Amino acid sequence: MSLWSVRTRALIGAIVASGAVAAGALVSPSTIIGTVDAVAADPVLFGLLVAGLYLVRPLLAWPTTPLAVVVGYGVGVPVGVPIALCGVVVTVFPVFVAARWLAAGAAGEDADMALLERAGAAVARYYETAGPLRGVTASRLAPIPSDVATCAAAVSGVGYRQLVLGTVIGELPWTIAAVVVGASAATVTAGGLEEVGVTLSLACAAAAVLLLAGPAYRRIRTASRSPTDG
Image (tube, rainbow, N blue to C red; front, side, top):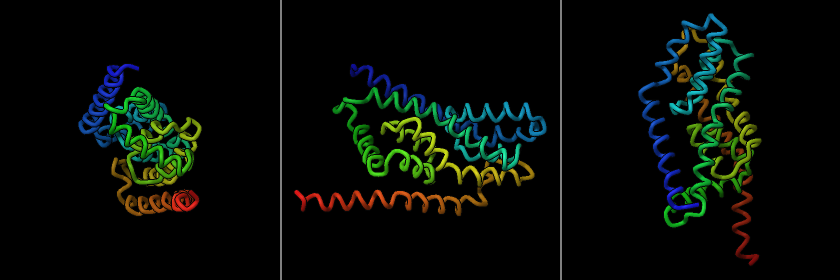
């Protein structure tokens, strides 16, 4: 693959990412979510609105939890949780495919893509230690932006099955909490998770640490024994 092609992919990725951040700043979730009350009573309109929000989320770099709040507000907890989980899975695929495409273009260009190579090597070591499914699950549990976790999975070669399963498992507590908050709200807001945000973040971060503790210990133990074995 030519160097021009690599730089072109990198430039496209930078432009798209910058555009998403700028658009997300101009069109915040609260701006759109404020219209939910007007259509919540109509199941068809509400379903179209939710589908549209999940589809445009990657283009606006929105977090996924406010959308789960909207789902919970409109349909309640029993139906809202599976719908919100499906929405998360659908909305991470465009980011995953785009990041994998950019990573494929950067492969093999050591001189000009040194920074990306080092970042990719760090992510690869993480997934080599944790494993694909455990690694995706822990990254979803951790309180980090969803798109960052998706890009890390894409550049490390995680398969689609591990991406889907890890996303569902790791996003489950976040989704349940958001849907419950939305279902109990009198008026839907983008900041509906503030009342449980800190506690939920700490709990999910602790779960991610526990999930990675075993693989990390085994890797450290193997690395410390290697010089002696050699």
